[in-house]
Image 1 (cartoon, one colour):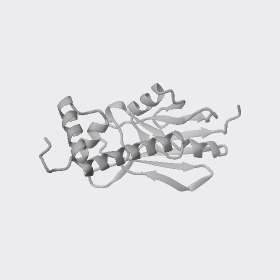
Image 2 (image 1 turned 135 degrees about the vertical axis):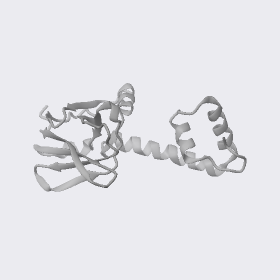
Image 3 (image 1 turned 30 degrees about the vertical axis):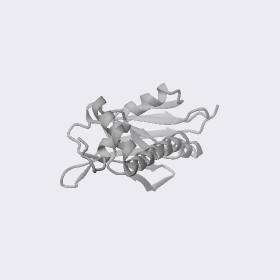
Length: 190
């Protein structure tokens, strides 16, 4: 698996960090990290990056698309999650409470056969501007995309309608819309 004098492949480090390696691989990675400063430093950097991403996510400073497993782990750890399920091409009335830490929207979507996916967000207050995220992660069998907007930004928004579109890109680079979702946002009223 790991040859003497070679560095650990990044995918092996990531799998180990995520707890996805078998016991033998785990032992080999541990032994290698104890002997190789370069790989040990890279692993330390990965841990620091993970802590930074978690801190930014829980501070509501970033928007992301995540897995249901991540949302479940956050909930199990006691993170206060406000969650909305939005039907395919549907809408929802929404807000964010002061005690909410993460805002999650489950966007139901027909994902069978989709290779690449982009998410585009527009506001009714600035329809000519869009925020776009390309090559977002998604799980086709789940039939949903789990969108976590920046809760810090959402807290500052005036009443408005946010529109999110999911765009699938085929192998020729042609985009097609596979879903459109409306969020009728109102600031927290208590």
